[in-house]
Length: 420
Image 1 (spheres, rainbow, N blue to C red):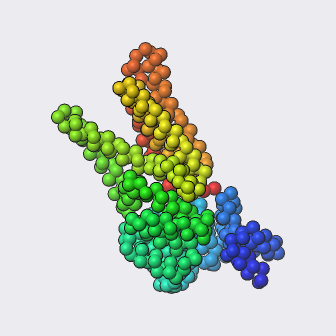
Image 2: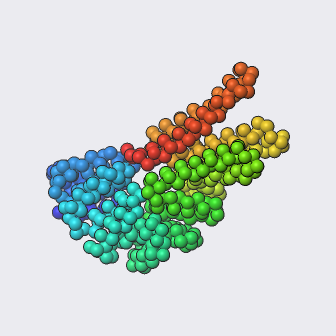
Image 3: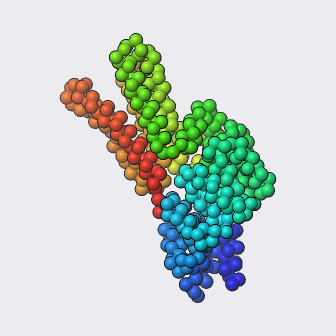
């Protein structure tokens, strides 16, 4: 049917409004065609405000033609956009079961595993797709990115370079080469690749995120933090927890040694501060360096609205900490130290707030952050009212514990958020 072909052409050209008009016209004549509902879903999924509608259309198509692999494939794509990775995986696997000879279906499964952090499974799916079509751009690019995530940088670079030479006008080919170059430590090459990807596809989120990382990697500190995160991501969840929790236990043991053997205190204290500083940086590194990126002529255009707000709030906290620290130095200690420490610690909930993927969760974590930030204020007021400094001592422990709990909960919320 010529009109379906026209709608498909408009979809390929990313002219989604016109494609939607064409498809709705066809559906008004025959609303039982599953393919039309699937194509309409692909139009709607490109509008962040219509993701629920896109899901409804995709599910309707599956109901009309449950034996069609294409409708399951489309449903998987829509669910992936909404961060519903488990359901998306089932849809992709069903498409593959119905038609195990389509490389696109394996490409979708590889994407899902990549988002889920299952690097080896992502690589396996991409290579399965390449057995069907050795020149499939999506599977080749996903193979390169999976290799990079697994730490096989030289293989990733070689794979990405071959794909790029074959498809120089494909934005994702530049993205995969950029991530491979970034992993290999070639930050300038990574910047060039991401810049070209953004020229070809200005809305490419992977290219935007990669460019931000590449620009921030000019800093030695950010490079170390980035490598730490990449290294941790290559381990299983239980090993990640063991490393982080194990480091905390070691610091507790060192603290006890410092208290029991005062002669060791000069060695324990610097290690304790270094550990706290590293943990703090791992939690606030991205918004902190994005604040610096605001002064870069190209980098400042990369940040979205939420990242700009995060950098603004981090800058306020940082400035307040500097003022408190300056006051402490001028007066040789005193309350200025506590003010500086307070604002440094408050950068943690600020970063957690703006890392949430949905508006509702951002507001929820933000409100919790404000309440937690008022805990020390409450302690000071209690001390003043009771005319006893010891009256507010317990609030410091409550404040620190609340920050830790919020960080754990917000991290879980960030991973499980479903886009509306």
